[in-house]
Image 1 (cartoon, rainbow, N blue to C red):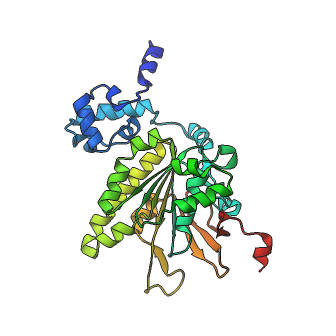
Image 2 (cartoon, one colour):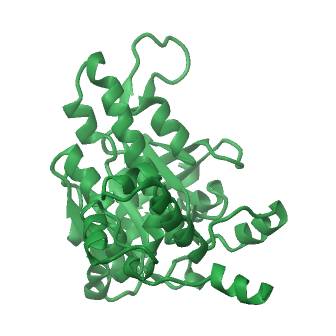
Image 3 (cartoon, one colour):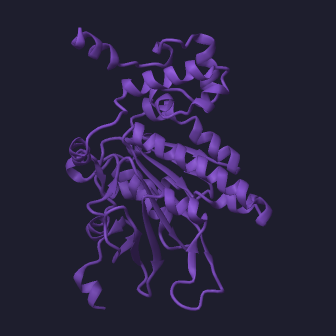
Length: 330
């Protein structure tokens, strides 16, 4: 009997209609709210499902079933250690930058790159879109990329350049990148809220928002709008981390910076978004130009377990690369 109950509690549901208590009409309402997959329902709140006309008790049961289906539950720390050993990593293209990040960008977490214009944020994003399609033995994840562009910085020509350098078929690489341009902050949030089905159907292993804060910064001006902006940013970032965890994907955001003229010592440049972005981004990397042309400096500002550090890499026609020894001596 115990084994029979165990089998019931771990039943796998493929579509949201498969969950007991969700009929066609409710499923349609949930999709309109952005819940297209069992994974997205597993990380939903009772309040969110209430918007589809579902009562608290029923909503709680649906979420519980969805979570049991994808194994979201309390576990011992030793089991978590085993799971952590299965976390995948994506190469940046530079061995020194990968080393700074503990072996590459982690799945199920948010990595933030911030810096001034021309520091290489979007170039890294382009490189990651190509690298994610490499097999695991070459530092990739064997999957596609979802790219939400808020500043019209995405260029397929650049993707083709990078793909050719890695010996990949440029046409196939471009085919495996799902692109969307966000025109406003609300549109940006809408795109991510409705991305779960696209992610599942296209084997997306990398989710990029370039840049995270551009629209929010331009639309919410003045202190009286700051609270609303931060609330929306918080909701947006939590949606991103839910997707990254549900689909074991790498999440990357780029961020603009602002100057703080009242700071007399230390770094006067700070990322936009305040504490909301700081607390939600698991790994933060500050990028800046060097005086040596294509060379960039990356500083690991914060990480849950890695020490702060700094390294250099370069951005060339081929993409993100290591700086050769002879270049370091110059």
